[in-house]
Every structure is written in C-alpha cells, then in structure tokens.
Amino acid sequence: MNINRRRLLNWGTGGLVALTSAVGLSLGAVLRYLTPSVFYEPPQSFKIGAPADFSFGPPTFMAEEKIFVFRDREKGFAVVNAVCTHLGCTVGYFQNDERFHCPCHGSVFAADGAVLHGPAPRPLEWFEVTLARDGQLRVDKDHTVPASYRLMV
Amino acid sequence: MNPIRDAWQSIFRRDPLSTDKGKSEFVFLNVWLHIHPAKVKKENLKVKHTFYLGFITFFLFLILVTTGVALMFYYRPHPPQAYQDMKDLQFVVYLGSFLRNMHRWSAHGMVICVFLHMCRVFYTGSYKRPRQFNWVIGVILFLLTLGLSFTGYLLPWDQLAFWAITVGTNIGSYAPVVGAGIRELLLGGHTVGESALLRFYVLHVAVLPALVTLLTMVHFWRVRKDGGLSRPVWKLKDPKSAQLVAIGAPDTNAALPAVPASQDKTYGLMEVVTGKPIFETVSAEEEEDTVFSYPYAFFREGVALLATVTTVMAVSIFWQAPLEELANPAKTPNPAKAPWYFLGLQELVSHSALLGGVIVPALAVMALLAIPYVDLNPSRRPADRKWAIRAFTLFVVVNVVLIIVGTLFRGPGWAFVAPWVHIAGAE
Image (cartoon, rainbow over all chains, first blue to last red; front, top):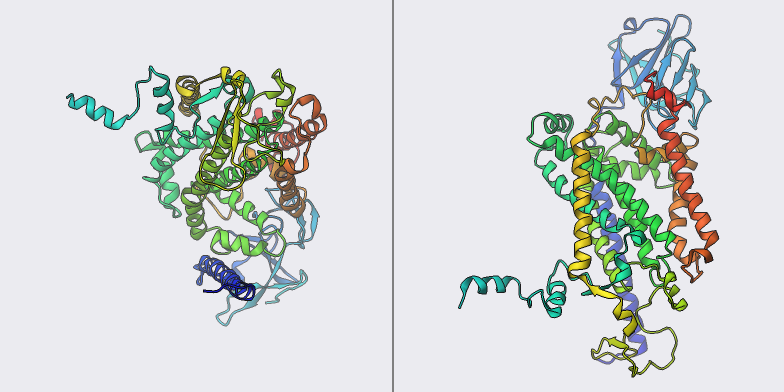
C-alpha cells in the first residue's frame, strides 16, 4: 500500500478519534457500572407517628431517621435534620443552653438551626412535615423548608 | 550419578557459592533476587545513610499482605456480620487476635515508615536527577498507603469505622464539581451502609494492594536502573560525584569516551540499536569499593526483615488493636477521632472543611509531587541546600504539630483540652 502524507493524516486522525472515543466510552461505562441503578436505602419520605406521640418542650430525637421533632403549644410541629452540615456527624441537643452541638468538630447551632460557632458552613436543614391521611405525621427529607415553617395540628 | 545431587542442581542451577561466579549467579539467576545487582557499593550498606526504611516499609507491606489474607478467611464484608467476625477473631479464632494485631500495627508502622523514608530521601537529596520521577511514584505510594489505611479501618464496622468513613467521604464531597459524585461512587449510595462496606472491602483487598504492588515494582526497578540505593556521595573524595550517577545516553553530543586504557571498565548494551548506546563506566577505584550482594547485602536485608517481623510480633503480643462498639449511625461518639495519622487532617477540617479538607491537602500533595522539578539545584551536599532543607523541615514540623494537637489537645466537642486531662481520665 502506498502511504503518502494525506493518507497518513486521514487514517491517523480517524484512528485517534476512534481510539479516544473507545477509551472515553469505556471509562464512561465503568463509571456508570459503579453507580448503582437501585439504592436499597430507607425512603426519604416516611411517617413518624401520631401528633399525640410527641411531647411539648425539648425536641424528640428519632435515632433511625436522624431528625429532631419540635412541638410547640402555639406554633405547632417542625422537624430539623440531626446531620451536621459540616461533615455529617449526628448533632446532640443540649437542654441547658438550648443548642445543638456537633461532637466531631465542635460546631454549635442555635435552636432555630443557625450556626453560632465552629466550622459548619450552613444552618441545620428543616424538613417539610405534613399530616398524612391516616392522621400520622409525614416527614419529607427531599423537601427542605425555611426555619420558620410550622405545621399546626 | 547421584540422583539427589542431580535433583538439587536442577533447582539451584548455579556454581557453588564459594566462587565469585556462584555468588553472582545466586543473584541474577534467581527471579526473586535479580532486582539486586550482583555487587553493591560498600556505602550502600551503611545503615546510617538510609536506615533501611524502604526495605522496612516493603517488609511491613509483606506482613500486611500475609496477615490480611489470613484475616480474609474469617471476615464477611457485610454489616452486622463484619463486626461479629471481628469479635470472633478477637476471642474465638485461634491466633485471630494476634493476626489482627499484627495487621493493625504493621499498617500504623507502614504509614510511619513511608513518611520517614520520604524524609530520608529528601534530606539526602536522592530525588534529584535522574530520580525525579521515582520521587513522584514514591509520593503516590504514600497516598496509596494512606488509602489502604482509610479503607482498612472501615472494615471492622465499629463506631470508629462508621464515623471515620462518614466524615472522610463527606470531606470528599466538598471537592468542587465532582465532590458529590465521588462520595456516591465511594459509598455506592447516599449513606454509609452495606454497599459502602463492600466497596471499601474490594478497594482494600484487591484494587489498592494491586496498585501498590505494581508501583512498588516500578519504584524498585528505577532505583536499580538509576545506580542502586542512595549513597552519601558528597562525602566521597571526588567532588564531582556529589551528583547522582546518571544512566542512559550522555546529554551532550560529545564523542563517547573510548574504552580507556586504564583499569576502568565500560559496560554497554551492545544490541543492534541505532543511536547512542547506553554506557556505564565503572572506575577501577570504584570497583574496589564494591562487595558481592551475597552475602553482604542479603545478610543485612535479612536482619532488617527479621527485626521488622519480630518488632511487629512483640508489639502484637502486648498491645491489642482497638475495637470500639458496634457501629451506631444514631450516636456519634464524642469526641469522634480518626486514627492518629489522620488527626492532622481532622484538625484542619475542624477549622474549615473546604479549605482544610480539600484545598490545603491538595496543595500539599501537589507541592510534594513538584519538589524534584522545582528544586533544580544539582548538589546533594546538605550545606548547599539550606533553604530546601528548611522548607521541608517546616512541612514536617507543621504535620507533626497538627497531629499532636489533634491527638492530645482535643477533647469532647473538639474543644481544646490539656493532654493531662485525658491521662487523668477526667473526661
């Protein structure tokens, strides 16, 4: 076969394009393979029980869901995420100063979730809480709401 | 005809070790030993120059592979069985606790030795031309060692495991653009759960050890090709030899030296190649300074191996590898501390996750990788490298101080405490 410059450049370019796409597609396929198509994880929206199950006063901690449920006589229900916005540790509520403290890196949040101290970049998230048809409270972790959000029951 | 002698000689096909030829063949006819040269320079054997830290790191890796495979026989990477299996290893399996201790303490030792080895290579200027890229491979091996430790301590599925991985993967998610993707890819989901444990297990027992093995081979090969182990050349009589010996074709287009009439010997690759052949000249004077690898080098390496194994065994008899209570996603321990070698990083992220967890470590790694390409001073003599030595020492001191602060001066809520508070058990 006769190889001249034009032929070499044409075939060379074509070959390079084919090789690059093959490598790119394979890498993409590997990344896609490693991303699960189904997540066997707890649902983001779930019921937490009847309103009467919750007491007034300090918030109720729900360990499995990692949330605090506030119930206030005048204002109603509100649900705050117990996961620290810094690096994901579970914060604790301290009644003596009415604040959330993170054990990992010392972030402190006010009762409304605002950052008072420490490395946390954002306030704690508040989740939408609604009343399901069966009279139970439903929390939706996919819907964040402003700290002022309350559900009156 | 002596069948036993014939069988022996079919296995060991070399001349008797009493002869020089036998000593050479002992090295280069043996697949395991042929990475060594048949003869080494006497200064290569000096303990005070290298402290055998590279060897010790490699031996610790061998212990880790051996004990790690042993532990795999009793370990299921699935919560909560993973934690039960740890308890079985601790209390039921014969020698289980001992093997787990060896694995854990060798891992700590390997982190220390890789770091010390890196310091030694820096202070002796051994990363200089032609060894720049081998320094880069070394830095990557250091990062892989940390990766192996990180993936390793998730496996017991205890509180430390769970919260270290929660925090660690969240640090990753602060990386710009790809952050959230990296976290999801590592965890195989959005929370630390069974898929995360399986992924870290596969990384820990297959992917990362394979990478370390391959890169170690390249690392050793290049050391050998670049003239062998580091030597304190600036102490030699000839001042020119303060630089590392370069192999490969000479840089200049000057005519190749004719084979000198002196006693110097020039070795070359005499294959059918075009272009300049590869030459290495060994002066007769230099040759006098060499000894056979067998037995001098192998004896010392054997001693280093024995000392490493004995030390790890002794430590494993007296100190138990920590195992906290079963992972509890609802309750973060207070304080939640990573193993000591990550506490410097934890101290940094306690100030800012993006700056301390992503930007500063990334810059530090890039600076380490760039060292041989930025430091173009050809001299290896410590007196000629004052600023390089000061800068690197500052880097080491900052790391050590951060780790000490994170380890001893941080209490519940990551608040500053005096170390004697821990000692007095006042927490």
